[in-house]
Length: 145
Image 1 (cartoon, rainbow, N blue to C red):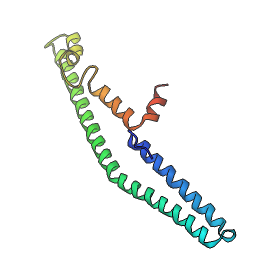
Image 2 (image 1 turned 120 degrees about the vertical axis):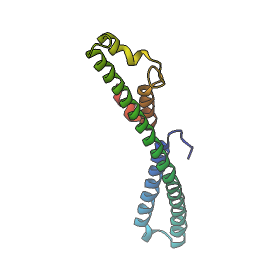
Image 3 (image 1 turned 90 degrees about the vertical axis):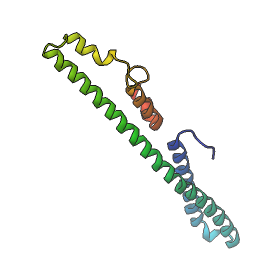
Image 4 (image 1 turned 135 degrees about the horizontal axis):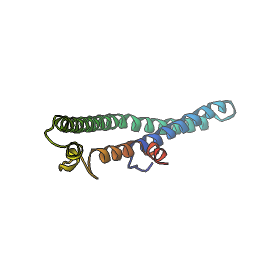
């Protein structure tokens, strides 16, 4: 099996491979009575070994996937914190405008006019969308159609 860029693609390929070997083993059992025992045992051993290799690879992926999920959860939490800070900044500017400190137009433009790593083309919104596309490529393409 070739290594995939997306961990979910690699996981899906391993699951399909596992299912294929399990089906082969089930079909093999149905032919046990019509197959010479030494041939049956050899083929069953081969399929069993292949299945065990795939199961080992799946088990090895579990830790990787848990780490990826943890990292993604941290990134999402940081993005939500950034979003909350921006909303708070906007609310504060609008409140200051409401009491007359500055104009309503200035309050509405204030958060967008200040330089920040969380705004603009590379900001939190685009980072979140890129993260979503990375983790859920099929869902992302379906949402943009």
